[in-house]
Image (tube, rainbow, N blue to C red):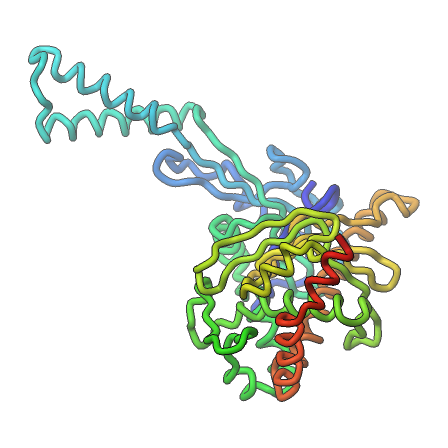
Length: 394
């Protein structure tokens, strides 16, 4: 059921162009026209992609009561492929070559004979795919939220999500922008009128006498996704040296902590990666030692509480992919439909809370305040306070 039950993992895409009207029969008809199974493509050569009803992997029915949920539409995208294991294909190749060389035992196959054997194997692969053998089906849940003009894709694979977005663009004429940390920073700069400051920023050197290098950053002038790594380190410092409650731009407050898991990586590619699992991973001495060596957080488990609602999830720093998020509101209402609408609203509020918290960071990061903030953060990294506090907490 994707976003409608259990924990969810998702990546967000902002809709920048939508030629469709309100959710209705037009949308359902497009889903039917592009549903999975209508293509007769050879799965051994090219995967098939299409829409599903979203209830389960084999659901290909669509109706307003099931798929249109208030200001949102929920359905699935399935990708079918034929994945024949390499050892089996190599075995078929040997069988074909043995048949071709039956009259010349001990001889080596010629290039022409190998090509003939390969073509025979390709034909066998196509026949197996036509029968449905070795078929693999993978489904991605989709929550199209008109209220926030966002599409939530229930997966973290960049390749799979790109294929899903391509189908949505072709089917509905939509255009998207991927919501990563750099994209959110650019949106903040546009709204705050600090574009000039935004375009001039570079990765921060948190340790003295070092040049900031980020090996997973491609250095392109329009890529600011490394800000996600700095955001997690900034949160770590804020929560450990001050209050665990931060005021947000909408006059609400969020209380937070690192929990369950923390993955760090050396931005220079010198000291390798480190993964820590603990009830409070940042409280462990090895976590403090890692950041003092210059490693940056790349993924972290977070717990946030805002407006009496708690969100537990993992955050991938650069892409802002949300993983294993727990939705805490099912079963509170008198009807199943209201429970569903409450879950969708919780997904919206979770994303909003993360964005508002990142906005607070951007207010400090993009402008003159960062010189003071980064200096204090660097002093904390070099002091013994982080180590002492970690040992005490542990």
